[in-house]
Amino acid sequence: MASLLFSSLTIKNITLKNRIVVSPMCQYSSVDGFANDWHLVHLGSRASGGAGLIIQEATAVSPEGRISPADLGIWKEEHIEKLKTINEFIISQNAVPGIQLAHAGRKASVSEPWLGNKKLDESNIGWTTVAPSAVPYHENEVYLPVALDKIGIQKVISDFKNAAKRAVEAGYKVLEIHAAHGYLLHQFLSPLTNIRTDEYGESFENRIRFTLEIVEAVQKEWPSDLPLFVRISATDWAEGGWNPEESVQLSQLLKEKGVDLIDVSSGGLVSHQKIEIGPGYQVSFSEKVKKEATILTGAVGLITEAQQAEEILNNNQADLILFARESLRNPNLALDFARELNDDIQWPKQYERAKTR
Image (tube, rainbow, N blue to C red; front, side, top):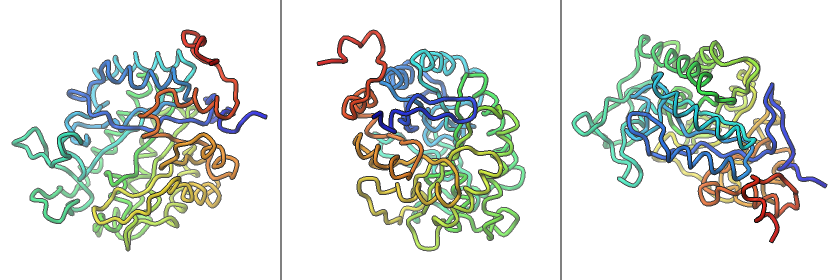
């Protein structure tokens, strides 16, 4: 009997050959937002390694939306050419290329992880960050983010819309809007970071407004027959923050607006979060959203083994399994998992002689 992990899933006009997704993972390897051969090899090797869907790292919709100066971007036409080349290779491997559109908000303008994730100011290749409210990530930060005014909000919405148009031109087949991990959209969702008193703050309906407007703007450019995902943090892991019940409510509204799948993660908003980490520690959030909002979900978070992933699908806790660090450790994750689950899947013809030991 074939496993669920290696069963296909059709969403709109796209069929994924299996339920294994390479989660978007920042590589901090760009100059001026441009993709290069590192991204081609990184993403391409995961495609030849058998994953059904490859989602490109958080890709900035504007220069100020980058987490670091080394982030990928899609804010100008010149970015498209190399991205298109990468996507053509992914498709040649019978995998589906996806992109995650993002704006880091107050968590922008920091150095790469191997340089300490240090806040960068304008004197050190950094820039002024923006947020729903002038609330810093760390209490002792010298430089506060600037609270977006109405013009600034409209610019971000327009940036997402234009980025979606470029994503179509670059050949992506799945688009994910990043509303998790403490980045700008998440900052608007949570009362811990959104202390506005206008139509974008206070009530649940107001705090979700920005995210819904971005979804609507993206949909004006993104083809209606291609899948649209939204990644959320189901909880802030902090008292008084965004919570699982609000995540279900938002997911229901996103489904009504035509979003196909919720990529359910958690945390990342505040430095004082207290996360209870363990194998599959976020799967219960995916299950809650899937069952209560009746929408497709993706499960993430310390999912490292084939049987573990198979059980999540068998228990109807998610529809896709996203692998981040495990995929970094092993680009051939899907090929190895198929062997463990006794699934006979197609290998790249160049590698077939290694299929049997």
